[in-house]
Image (cartoon, rainbow, N blue to C red; front, side, top):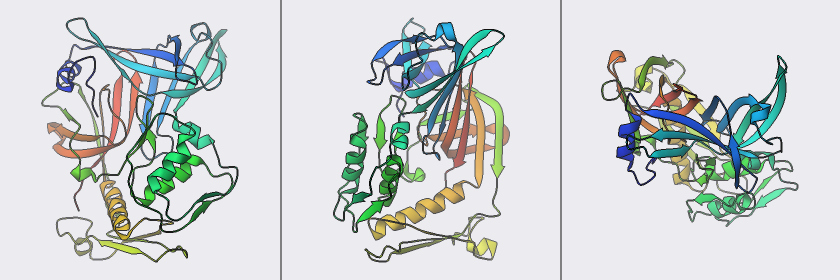
Length: 366
């Protein structure tokens, strides 16, 4: 997350964004399939949502009068919502909130023709594009190169963290398999994050980093800033959390691998010693690069399940820069909350006084 823009540092802009009298509004531009801006759109209010557990993570919705929609009736045009901030010196800073393929649909209410706009980020292109023959990735292929080759024909705006790990066995996918599915399966094999798009429409292919090892990107505090709203929910579900995790491979073309993680931490309420029994979570993995990757993947699965035991939901005024599993520090003295969290989903109301809903899981170390 980096919201530095217009020659201003992130620290300078955060000071303005956290101000109780900040001046914020929203604008919408339209782009063609080549991402060339072709106009603006007048929308009274819209909504941007992001869910890191879905294949298409970022979505957009809004409605507007037909007369205000210019000619946005063509298929696959893009809408880019912008969050605008006016600084005390009169400068205006703008942040994109996503680049969306739109699917407008007409409706009529009280003789006023309107169009409801639903949009999906650019991963919709790979989601809709399916292989027309059995798709084959041979042993010896570099995983990240295979993903870049698969998606490179669909996008010219990929940011790829290349890694020289190679496949140990051939792998095939059936006719009709989504290219997004194939890419994500290859990325999982080397313990990468799933493929996603950032707010500026760049496709991101990057290595997974344990949330405990990631720096805090943004802090929300009822003590230090005024945009944290008093709307806090903490949901706990500790009863069914596993304390033993097993991941294994059964690919006849490669060697058998297995990884086991047991939670024996006496300070953990989920641990085997504290529960007095084992609760086992076992799954087969279709493909993995190495034993080390399988071990990391097993730890990742354990963290995901254990962090889901405490889910924090809160609201703030809208903030730019949030994306895929943003690392947050949340401090709320009223609820005795003072911890690091990973944001699994969020939602922004794009209107005057609009608020942002954050859904987070508490970060654990194992």
